[in-house]
Length: 323
Image 1 (cartoon, rainbow, N blue to C red):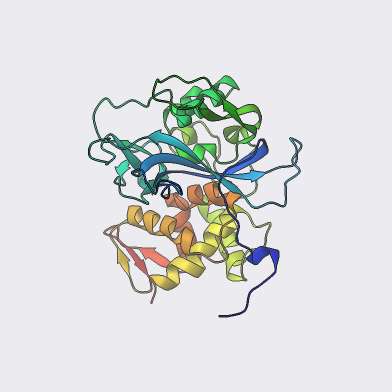
Image 2: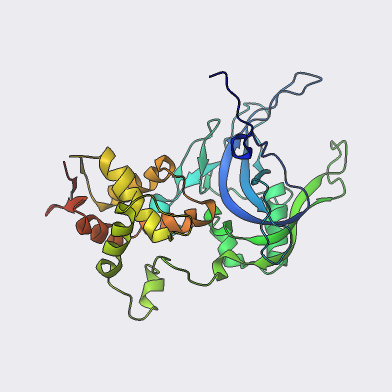
């Protein structure tokens, strides 16, 4: 393919680093990453565990989004063992069905492993308060971020954080440090992700939160509308999370699972969440969390499947997709 496009949308964008300024986190995860070899010495350190934050730049704190593509920031969480070169204390973890109340699964310490939380390999493991990740969360708490949210270490909780991000230099705290270390922090928070007003298509609260919510609408009342919108064509740029989730079921998951029988609704949730990354057009970063929550709602899944005959729940609890 010898042709080269000069269109801005086709240009390569290096996503490393974020210069001081306003931004909004559009994606966050734990990641095992290895930096390339040093250009001068040729030496390469072992893989490490990082928090990977994808931040969309804003021109100010008034909601004026920049035309720049999002940038990535890597914040160290845990270094590899100096002797073995392996991560033997903490790995990326993943909550079952994206539910932060569940016990996380170990995503391993292999290079490229990622998750939505952390998994302690050894009992009693605690994060070092001198790491870049803990310096970042300390700045969040100082600016009013709820400690209870930080305690559960669900990286999706950071998606939607609108703040002023800054790299600061701190004094050396170890004798082997050759220069003063830098930390990535927030100096002002404009919008807390957990305080965003309920928007169009936002999933209803589940579990204990649902018990405190009055008169939750029946899933079947909204699911057919969302499915019908998805069936009419690709969702528009202003589509709700529910419409996008419905499109993922009808346009991506169902065609790939024709005639397949899944063990139960729990497996259906997992398959639906995995289909997000395969869906075209890509799910907007700012709606990804809401889409994940929608696809994790068992009642909504069942109602949506029935609305368009995508699949049926059998008497034994299995889920059967149409041929």
